[in-house]
Amino acid sequence: MSNVPAVTDATFDAEVLQSGTPVLVDIWATWCAPCRRTEPIIEELAAEHGDRIKFVKLDADANVETVTRYGVVSIPTFNLYSGGEVVKSLVGARTKKQFLDELAEYL
Image 1 (cartoon, rainbow, N blue to C red):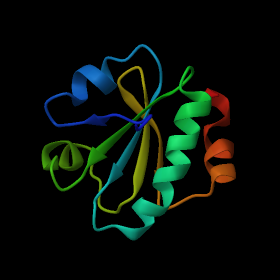
Image 2 (cartoon, one colour; image 1 turned 90 degrees about the vertical axis):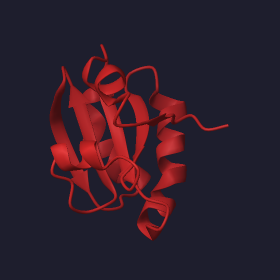
Image 3 (spheres, helix red, strand yellow; image 1 turned 180 degrees about the horizontal axis):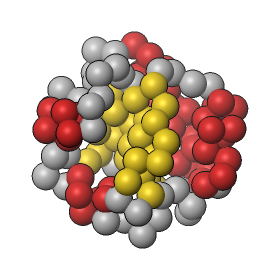
């Protein structure tokens, strides 16, 4: 079972923007090889740090409204939301250490 639930255009505002904790949104697509490579890393981070950051994934192909609203042009994109705003945006695959370094102030 996945540690990282999916959000959709319909649930995005409630699950992400209205969250009381920071939320890392993994914007991905099934055909994206770098997205598949980072999936196990995001799963590990969610298992280890899910008490401080909420981790969710958003299928870019199925949720065009949200992707367009946030100007996502490349995937994978990892947007960190806090207080309803994007506070950090990471584009492209990362190693676990790179994710930890980028997210350190929220962990």
